[in-house]
Image 1: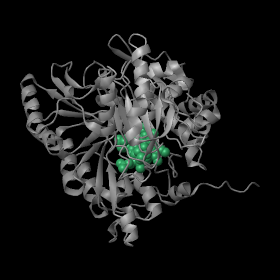
Image 2 (image 1 turned 90 degrees about the horizontal axis):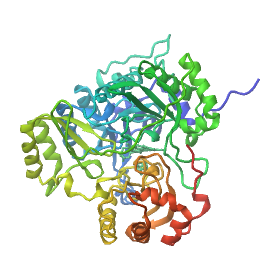
Image 3 (image 1 turned 45 degrees about the vertical axis):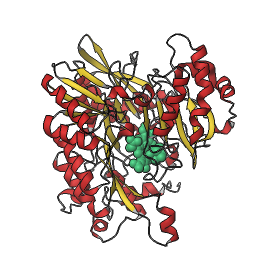
Length: 573
Ligand code: HEM
Ligand code: SF4
């Protein structure tokens, strides 16, 4: 007989947790500032990362004091759609229990930073009272379901958001642990018969699982970057079905060739009534075949590449119960940030704000947080979070347009037109000081790098070109750098790798341009490339397309960079 297969400690921890319970309830009641390692792993499934302030870490260590622990609590908002009231509860809880800021995430949720352990329950209960959950916002489970944010610009938008909500409901944890620990407090042991998690089972998924649904032409959700990407198809005004993409994902490890960013591959086409069933079949196939021994290779992208797309499809079809149709042509053409005033189909108005790196805060003289609070209280718009960490205020009448602009002005919030094209197309992940995985700065660095880039672009006469620019503090890729036109990825403390060559619709992977460039030199390193772009681009050619056309050898020669081969991945997907 073969010995039983060994599973990783993380898998064992899930198995032992009695469907995500572990000792979380007891630990929460104890008078401590943090959790044990095993509990922090479980906490993620409930929407929380334990963190410590990395700016203070060394100083506290020297003084032999414990790290400055606090929690990042993330809410899960399908399609990023909130009522004004739901927005306001986030605002209040951030003031009362967090660091008085809110972060719109790159996946249409909110993050509270700086929540002390003793206040977690108040935050989680607070959002739940307004029907927002944190369950499944992190962890090895289906995360927030993203959807094309455009609020009623086209007739099928409401339908797309309906599907996003249904998908989100289908994949919510059924174990009861979340309610027991955070909400009603009653201890309910999992039943002895029947599986409390009919979709996930006792060890949930091998790794996180991301779902995103694009528009028909608009790829604002970056549909190729999700484990399961869904692209709607319409004929006339009617939604006729969905193309299903599988195996997108961006987490990589520097220098480790077995990890790489990958874009989703077309798996099949399904009718609208089959969307929930095919999604379930894909998730269950990943549950059954995903790598549970090596977490670095546990995402769906590796399962698809290991099995091969055809064999993966066969297994999906077995679980779906029938053959699938081949995928149709995908019509995605652009990424629309939704900035500025737009008329909605029903005649009301929507205003899309640009929010630098998604951080909602009051920082004199810019008091965005106060402005949004007053707008939500007085004008009660519908609030849409976008995948670019921005926010749209929708459902406004003609007579509310002036008051909205008045409130923004009163609090010193710049209207979207006043930002440069490159800044409006940029985003950064949080990185330091909160993220335990950050190697280098991101959210705190990108604004100044953009200021330098703006100067270089002005000097080269390119200031009106929107270049999709993204920065992360490590190669995990939370701000989706690997399909941007220009990306900076933390490499060592104080340095970033520069990548170029993605495109404006997010359907091409970048290549490495230069390694280990320090923060102050990022913009100046790029200057010769911008000069060459200005000189030799073809009419209308985007910066990413230009870099792709020239290829790595030429662009590296232009900026004078030498790149170690071990740092480049084979491009997949
Ligand atoms: C191995 C892979 C990854 C790990 C271990 C990881 C871990 C983390 C951690 C610890 C944070 C919290 C940072 C903070 O708020 O201080 C975070 C934030 C976030 N991550 Fe990841 N991440 C990974 C990859 C990704 C990828 C590929 C995406 C999306 C394409 C993503 C999306 C997000 C989002 C939306 C946030 C919230 C903050 C933001 O908007 O940037 N993550 N991640
Ligand atoms: S990309 Fe890295 S540094 Fe940035 S939030 Fe994600 S894990 Fe942290």
